[in-house]
Image (cartoon, rainbow, N blue to C red):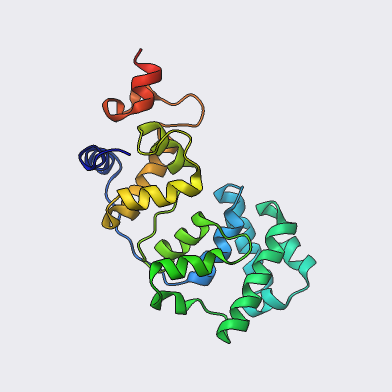
Length: 222
């Protein structure tokens, strides 16, 4: 793992280039959960389309929970993997109702972050990234989501040991990054992955992190 001094320099350069970002938790943990399940293995456009179709077809979460499975699957088809995602969403809604007596995830706000994460990950189809997104974006809890961009950029920068899995990366980055950086650092790593550190043919010649990047020093500079 990188030293805190190197991590700080990377964070400051990202802030200078992409700006700071203020976390404003929206408190809709249930909507965030469904939206993030829909986002798995698809792009933002398809996710948003599927979510909009689901809410238009079923205005309440109770209606989603109680609808025929094939109707939910059809509504979310633009997100891909609908035959898997639909039953997972309905199963999550059914379990929440059974345990809480109503369709709400408000109880997570009162739990320690570890317990809240464990509960979310006990749902079928909810892994570390989905749980962390719900905790951070909806509830403002200190969790660090690692998506494809964050994993790729962090790995190339040398913030993670070689061949670290995305699941393990959540643990390592949460331990290394100060919690009050989580939101801005997460957003800026994604932006860097989209603008410069592409999966294929990264624009290393335009990168302001060259001197701090293991990938650049190893693969490009030579």
